[in-house]
Image (cartoon, rainbow, N blue to C red; front, side, top):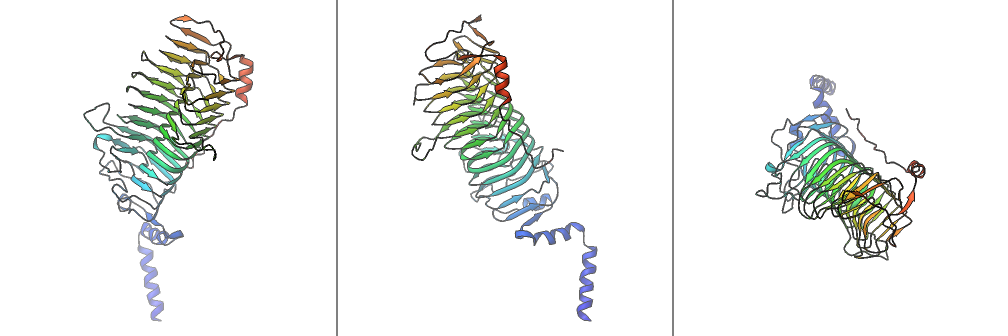
Length: 454
């Protein structure tokens, strides 16, 4: 009888408890023992270790926010956004993460000022991203960052330079990222490396990721998807649609990846080919008016035994400086890199060097090869070396490539005559009918956003 009375009292107490408290008690002891986050206060109490899951939308109202893992102790747990929205961030949600896991995260309307960024994220200069500043050995899947603004330290050299800025993360090393998308981002900083998804990437795998409606400006390496790539990072079915600008001296700008260093010590026996891009797309506008600038519709500099296969660029490219180099697909290819079965379609202007597909095919680290690729541009223009396919080829690295028969080539303000040479800078002729058939055979990557864009 006493036991029955006690049970009745407990049940009665539960009946009058707020619904959120009941949910928290139930979910906290649920699958895998994850801690349930209901409010901004809960979010602020997340510790460096542990497994967390959101149970409601959270609005931080642009109040004071310290990124999680913003110290020597990196976040190494898991965070499941469960499709709920986090709004009102004034800094990156996470600062430094290592060995962590993120899924189903949705961040909307964050406004981050580099001038007031206070997180010590383990670099000489700040790294800033919508989800996290710096991530190593981390897995991310189903991430959506929308309406992100990163500003401050805008070309002001009196302020410390930012190392890297990205829509998902500033710096990524040895991470696996799948279905991560930046939708509508605006970045204007003095960052060394800026990109729609990440500013700087060192190794890792990226599948079905992209940036849409992004406007990105920076100083050194600025790309629609990523600014700077090291080592053997792999990109599959990824895309970028962005307005990309840089004004720094000796800078790199591109619709997808601005500068690809590949790997410094390639292992030929094991097939290590540096960075690899497979079935990726760039639909961007690229502008570089810094001194000694290099611009490409898909990639600015492709180096370090890197490889691009079955990828496509419709980016328009402008390299305004007197030493400006521009290529409809690649600004310069060097150090035993190669591009296969790919195409360019945008308008190209390079003051010193301009090519419908490639600006410069370098002899350094040869053989650098471009095989069975198409320059489908309507116009290529410049004041110096201006050709239908490659503005300048320093060695015989063009194999089975073609250029649109109706392309306008303007050199020094005059219509140029396209005269094939031993290196094939002008490419073979291809008609509009042949182009349409080839384009119809291309496979286009599709975004599979985990969360509906409400």
